[in-house]
Length: 277
Figure 1 (cartoon, rainbow, N blue to C red):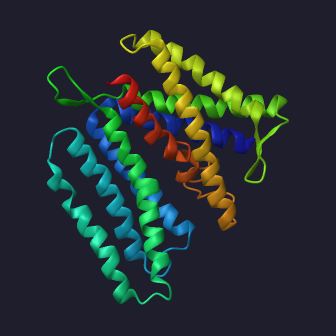
Figure 2 (cartoon, one colour; figure 1 turned 90 degrees about the horizontal axis):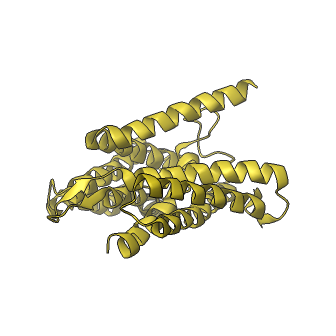
């Protein structure tokens, strides 16, 4: 019971911070998600035992990813041109050159871990900026929280629906060798919850057709499920249960954003192809 209360309180605070950051102001979105990007990278590098002995390099790599998010925010909101990415390019060059002096037994592993995490974590979170930057009638990009919030709503309701339905009637395993607790019944339960939410959003934002909301929610659920399974595969490969313990009762940052890792780029593709064009 104590763990359930802890989990519930953490979840409420977590959701409140995210919703507040997304809706309060573009700067709050920038600050909170830059922090989340850096913390997720720090957790990932610790999870794979990367830079275990050189915390400075771990910090630089985490800050590099956080900078990518901030630079992408500035670029997509037309606050800066492409030159804003030059420091990140310097960070990538540093990553290559540093291995000449670190003298690790297998520098290829270090490069692979660094660049994979930049793509997997920093690249995904940075994609949110492209989703949030909505062009107005004059073609000028302005910050719009609608799609960002919708993606998180679909993910949260999918998780809730999948858990409730899977716990009650789940029998057919979805991907037993990677995540034995997930079931097809749970998958469809989460999908139905997200599809229902999409129609509520269609009523709230009728400028976007109901069928596009439906398609976006289905896209988020499908790719979010794959994102969840990919993080499960990562943890199973590394032999860990949770990616971290920064969120009491919920594990680590990667555990909370695993679905987003594939859902965000897939949602962006859908939005560009079917909604904004």
